[in-house]
Structures are given as structure tokens and as C-alpha cells.
Image (cartoon, rainbow, N blue to C red; front, side, top):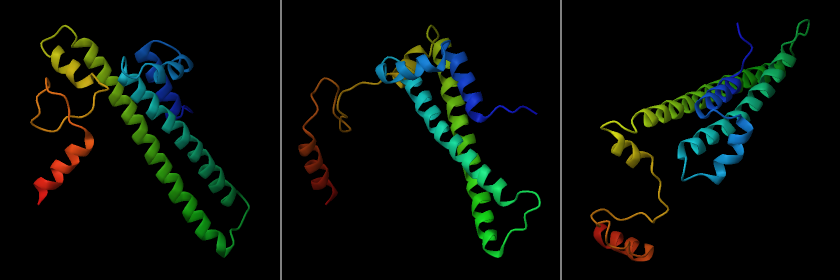
Length: 161
């Protein structure tokens, strides 16, 4: 059985997909959010995975200390053992979820790259393109400027009554 952690697997997936070391990608992700939103998403999930991996290690160490060989736990230790085991299971679940999210982002990136010249290329570009424009209310065409936020919220309050 491999000793590789979920973080090791995530780093390997991200490095393989983008073809650069993780250290370079960590620096590039905040600078290129519009050019490569999938990289930013993958690095966001990877950063969460770092925190969860640290949490997993702490809970695992605590559980091993409470259940070490030759140690008979006291009555008050039973609650701590149960809490540590529960926290460890939660950390493992969060770790697996973050790893799946990274896998989904990497898969979506691969699909987007293969669809560049295909019939769905426009749909892929529309789904991955991020703009810095303000959100438009439903029914407002793209050639009209978006109204100020205060006017939009006042209009929505009037329509709810």
C-alpha cells in the first residue's frame, strides 16, 4: 500500500495537468484568475486540502497518543478518544471531497482543451469565461448598461409585494 497522501495525489494531478511544478502554479494562480479560472479553482481546493491534511495529521497523532500500546485509558479519556476518532473521520471525508473536486477541475480542463476546435467549443468558452462586469438582472439585454445596485434591489422589493 502506498504512503502517498491525498495532498500528494492532488499535487501530482495538478502538476500533470498544467505541466508545471506546484510552486510555480501557486504563484501564477492569483495573478491569472481571468485567464485560467480552472487553475485558480484547482489551487483554491489544493490550499484547502493542505489545511485538511494538517488537521488529519493532528487528529491521527492525538488518537495514537490516546490509544498507545500498554496504556489503559482512564474513564475521562474515552470521550476524548471518541471525539478524536470522529474528528479524524471527518478530516478524511473532507480530504477525499477536496481531492474529488480537484479531479473534477482537472477533468473539466482536459475536456475544455479537447473541445477547443469541436462543435461544443463555444459552449465551453461560455462556461469557463469569467468577466468582471456587474451581474445583470434577468431580462436585461447585454447591450443595455446594468442599473445601479440600489435601483435593482428597490425594483425587486417592489415586485415582491
